Length: 137
Image (cartoon, rainbow, N blue to C red; front, side):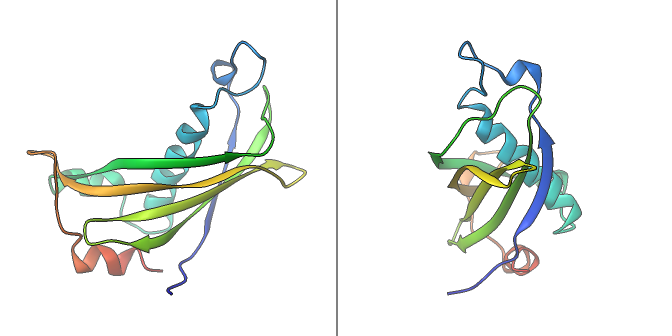
């Protein structure tokens, strides 16, 4: 089994992330993972999402699994840690964990399965070897 690098991004809970129960709404956790991945694609892999779009390609989230441990609230800071867990013929599984700062307590963890698609058709396309190599750090 391959081992890939883990990358971290710090984020803050915004007022519009809060639901009626005064904690972060469950759907926002995927927003945090996506924001971290966009930032990490550019900073760590040196191939931002815009580079895929320029090539007529994009990433479609095929599935997501989240295990919630404890809530985040208004004004909380967090670290979002992501890494590629495995590649498939047409995509990858990105694992993640979110920890509350400064305590480092786990808020949630899980994974998202992404499929590389051709933007013109919306259909899956094979993951080119050069992309796999670039993201295998």
